[in-house]
Length: 165
Image (cartoon, rainbow, N blue to C red):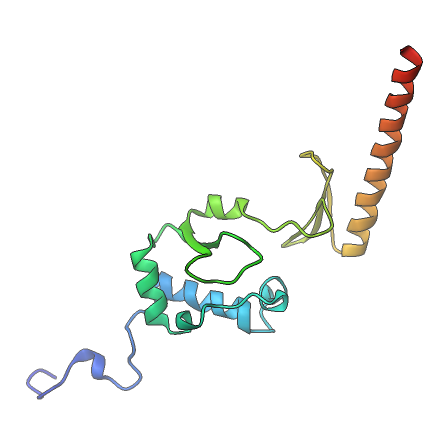
């Protein structure tokens, strides 16, 4: 195509940015899918909870420009600092997957987290994992049963202390 007046590679029909197969483009597409696509398996954690995308970021070029000027690297992933807020410049950063995996939303039911395989129950203020359950209802029952046993155990300890004193 050399020699055609005014021809530039990016003048092709449908050509926008040449990054459709890049990692940063996949991150942008996946972010939009989680927020906008009700068929996406992660929609319940994003769009269904009202999480939105900063409107200028709906344009890939504007998102890419922000990302490149705010620490994007191929070994990093986008992270929302506050998991209850939107994807926006004030709430997003680029971090390693290890850091991102520690920034998890704990559901209002203390000690219960949504995991890929189901609902994980942990003892309150402990690192004891009580199991992972397919149903939220079962997870709540296990958590409540554990909490009740802890209360009974604590009351026994208090009674023993009173008898000793």
